[in-house]
Amino acid sequence: MKARISGVATHLPEHTMTSDEVEARIQGYVPHRGVIERMTGVVRRHVAPDDQQASDLAVAAARLLDHRDADLLIFASASQDMVEPATAHIVAAKLGLSCPVFDVKNACNSLLNGLQVAEALIRTEAHRKVLVCTGEMPSRAVRWRVEGRAQFVDAFAGYTLSDAGAAVLVTADADRGIFYRDFSADSRAWAIGTLPGGGSAHPRDPEYSYFRGDGRRLKEAFELVGPDIFLDALKRTGLTWEDFSLVAVHQVALPYLAVLTQALGIPEDRLAVTLPEHGNCASATLPLQLCAAGARPGDRVALLGLGGGVSLGVLFADL
Image 1: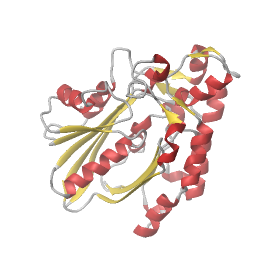
Image 2: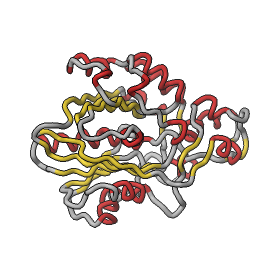
Image 3: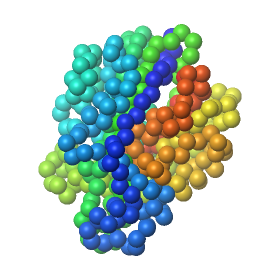
Image 4: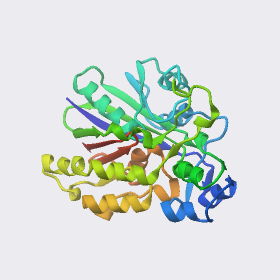
């Protein structure tokens, strides 16, 4: 038995902010106007309404799919409504589902890991139809009052992040489905990008409620891990990137996307570049690219994930 990606949907909040608008909202230090777009390629990002939660974005995407008889729901996201209970319970309640639920959390690789878990459970015949969904709401963790260059650099990655929801249906199939997957991590780099508040380390201090990170060090950490996990996937399957209708790559900045795709030899016509108009949608990025490319049954797709921590993942599937 295989596990097939049988449906993908995304939900993007209507309200957007351009990078110029983001810079205009920042109170305090900004080195010069246009720095965010120039350094990252992000033109605009989505911002959810104040009265919505991460679960609402996941629900909006899930409602675009036939989720009614799902026998498992996995909420796989860097964001969450609250520490307890699992946000999956809140999503299930809003969807009217009564199946088992749990959360999977691994920064921007959360949804990719959710697909990994769903596939394993379907292959072992524990479940037959799994709804994997995410609701990313990083706009709540952006620092708008900046005191000096060091704090601006520390907060910079947050200015590229975008709110988004996504849902993926994974179903049992005798013939087609996910046929390769591999994951790795170098956890020594966990402190490079963090949102420290709300856990046992910093339970109440609002100063730790902002996303912080060093983009340069994060890039270096991924470079140290190297591209082998992606290149090995081709060697082990005997495929080339030309064999895929779409190669979806997690996108954080256009310069780094160019470096990565050049290192891996991915042709431009196999990419769906969503970053400029949608920003970094965290774990919703890969399903967003599937939707943007119009992926349909019969397509062969590659999903390449990069997440803080740091972790990497690759998954090949016949839709």
